[in-house]
Length: 590
Image (cartoon, rainbow, N blue to C red; front, side):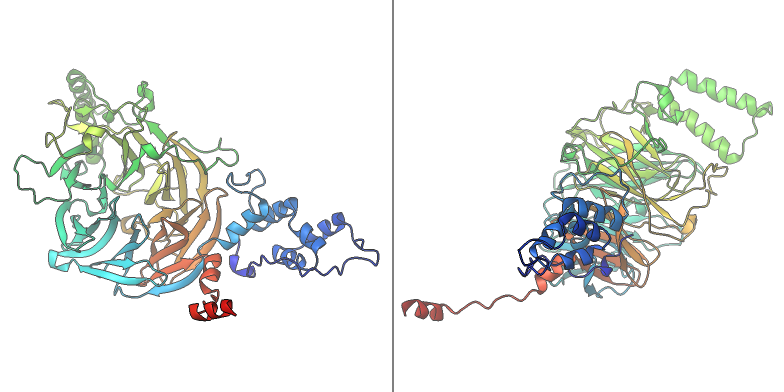
């Protein structure tokens, strides 16, 4: 990882004009080719300093081949990775990665009194919100000096703490998610909608389990979850669409509608919902495949294809009731005859799978309509540890609470909805984030040991301390980058918590349990900066209007603001004092 701090302030001034390297006849004492070879042996700081000596050295110090070599050597980028498609020169690209990464701490906010768990920016970038174990949602003004605008205490509503927030598209409403007070193993939560004009609490919606978090689907409707137990390790997750304004006077107007009902096996549940807008996939593609991707495992399963062999879980496809009865009869015969040795958990899962075969609505067509949106969430099929990402298309008619409350197009026997795609990461998922164009999904995962097999759903495999940051293309449904690495986590499976990441146009950032935030370049797959805190870094977020500003939130109860070296210089540069108008006018009359 390149250390930005070891490089001096970037100077862009030209040479003084002295020609100390010329002979008496005005000819260079050294040819350009020799100077070029000498500069190749220097570091970038020395090259820039040498370029200030004279015009000849300055011209050589800006040579494209020289800075290409400096770039690959300094940032340790693989030689087969091409230059960023938007870059104009190697010199400017080197300068971008050094000078425009938000790695300089400019402000520390200490208004929270407990661990800060999550940060979110408004789409305009003028405000951001923070959630904390102190059970408040704080809204901040994002000026040159950040200031607190409003603090909402959620303890009167029986909340234990706040954990997540999201601004709606026009920045008029804030969704805040929290956890109810209750026993240690309680999984209930609630979503609150706050007006950003009056800061009034507009509505509250139950949310179970609490780590569904919730998200906006439209400007005035949000998604929440509910969980229904069917057996000891079998359950059903229901995802609901809720109107943000629930004080509707007419009894004929729906304020809630069921979106999907999904079966959970082996103690798994649906968590961490988010929405990707397919209509934004055609934004300029700034993320290119780098190097040979042939070694990447196939993690994405298309469940909407024509071939049943593509589906890893037979419980996701509709079959006739006769086939279900025959399957149950054969299974019981094998158990009674002693041919099948099944534990109670395995028996329950097998029965649930067979029953679901005849009561599941098939997945949608695998070809995504650009008018639609994807609902994305963590799930699983082997254990309670979230090791899969489920993807489900949301059709245009589903984006409103109007219509039948329990959803359209469901037959009397179709209890469950099948997923359209599943991504299996073979590890514990601890974070997800979308690129600004919604095309790329970044996933924080702690890998299981290679070849590990889950025998007991309540005892998942051990997880690695090193976090893998995986990248998936939602347009092609394939993994497109090798894992980004640098950050670490140390908690075991049963204590594992979410570490929020964020993606800007050029960078991706994440928190970690090693007391640092991290920033990588999306194109070159290199770590550019480590951002120090005194405890676990739970959340990071870029300003959507200015990727050279990053916020980090930590268990040390602080929020830190980081800006790029370039921005810091601009903000600290002395500004000329304007001449008084009358003085200027008098001087003009003389």
